[in-house]
Length: 131
Image (cartoon, rainbow, N blue to C red):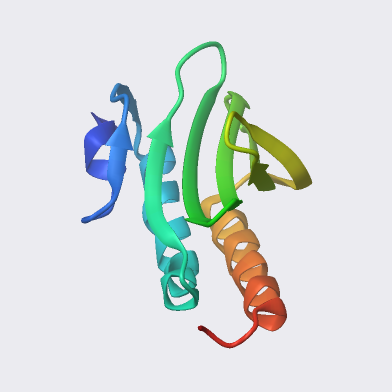
């Protein structure tokens, strides 16, 4: 099923670049926001949803607090080869510099959802009480 990517951006999220993708890719942004939206309670701004173009499809959901950026992405290299990538970035004022990255291969929507849930649990366990 093919749908408009603009629908993949949850309400209130800023969406950049729209193009047509299949329904399985549309669910990523909604699920990532659902699992990580608690970050707003810790002073993070977001979510910003970005849809990349090019040979590989990338859908990224970002939250930012000061110079720290947490970004979770779905990278689709080819059909049935999907990766959920978590990247911790530090912005030095000029560019985003990678600080941490983890990559999990997922083959089904259920694996994608479980990976996002695991990442959210890890964040919650390491977060300090909100300011």
